Image (cartoon, rainbow over all chains, first blue to last red; front, side, top):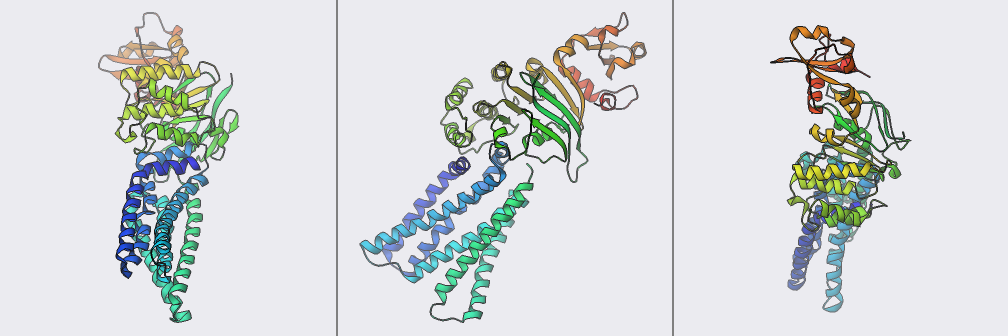
Amino acid sequence: MKGLVLNHYYAIEKGIKSSVAAVAVLVIAALVIQEDWALRFAVFLPFLLIPVHAFEVLKRDVLSGWNRFEITLPVKRKQIVQSKYATFLLLLLVSLALPMVLYTAVHFLIEPVFTDIVFNFLMRGMGLVLCLAAIVYPLTFKWGTEKSDMIFILSLAFSFGTFGGVSGLLALVIGTPDWYDQVFSLVFLIVALASFAVSYMLSQRIYKKKEF
Amino acid sequence: MTEILEVNQLKKTYPESAFSLDAVTFSVPAGSITGFIGENGAGKTTTMGAITGTLHKDGGSVKVFGEPMDGTKDHLKEQIGVVFDSMNFSGELNPMQLSNVFSQIYSRWNRERYVHYLNLFKLPGKKKIGSFSKGMCMKLSIAVALSHDARLLILDEATSGLDPVAREDVLEVFSAFVRDGERAILLSSHITSDIEKVADNLIFIKNGTILLKVRKREVFETFALVQCEEGELERLDRRTVLAYRHTADGVDVLVKEKEKLPQGVRTRDFSIDDMTLLLMKGETDEGSRTESLLRY
């Protein structure tokens, strides 16, 4: 599987590097201006810009014919799906690590910037992009990349629908105490992770039957 | 002779398509190149897809090196090199990055051999594949297929897009590949002159059905292309007529067992291209298409 992930990385290397550089500049700018809205946005931004490159892999694989060719390689279909999800998770980790490292450096070297709000936004950002991936992968495997626009709209609807749904349900169950934001962020992340796990299993099933 | 690839009663249908592979059966012996010939949509790519696992077969069996082939058998896939007619690799990579990828995938990836083929085919190692011409992409795919110690090459239109000089080089490499008698190639190509140059065996397929399986040597030793007038067709032994086709000058007839031809019949030299044309476009005695006469 390492080779497949490496192939994905090479295919989107340029885009990842540009996004990481842009995110680093914007996070540093947010840390410099020290506005609340900027600090929240800076935590959220990496999740919007970096993991989406993993979805681009799906398109490139089809365009280049790699998706058919990789079936003939000494790897199992299961590993092919794993490699696509692994690429996404690696980029998600980068999106998490980048603001964490910068915020930690500022927190300990200059002044405290880590607040509950920052952690909440980290969890929400991760949750949203995990929900996106949970829809993008199985539907792309099922319908093909030619329906990518519709799939992306559906995945956005699912992400924000889940976000709103969890928020509404939780408010019904526990009300809106002071610690609501923390609990909501955590519950939303857990629901997103569960969706991602279900999506992975669905994708495996779809890919097993897929023909090229 | 050991069979490297055995395809037996292979069946494949597609939903919403009338096309089907109809019990396709053939084998590819060790030390040989088998040319797989047919029109577009005849079933060559479908057969190759069912062999390599990109398509799920509906029936029949595929054995590689004597072992049933399925997509989970990595040790078999290690020994098969595949080249498709279209581009196989992401355009963002360069050939050397591709080597890094394959060294993580194939246990017997041979970087030196790969670089040797890159040099032989005059391919730049550090240039993005996206900037390559179709011919360069095909040569790169062939270089990959030859660099992991494969024993079977499945080449779907692998010579298309190559200029005549490059085709010559590639065909020479294919011939050298099977020379040790341990390896084999299944090669489909629209360019039948390529197949004529290197193939040992020929398989003709039409509408998902194998029309004819024959050794190339046998074709040129025992087959003949007869040119006759409309009335002369009756003089031929109908059992030896494989196919005939009306032309502006009369009738072209492909016959086997040419020693049985009556005296005075006019024959002409023919190529695999002529033979293909007759088998694909020709008729049989009953006026039906040739596959009904030659069905195996």
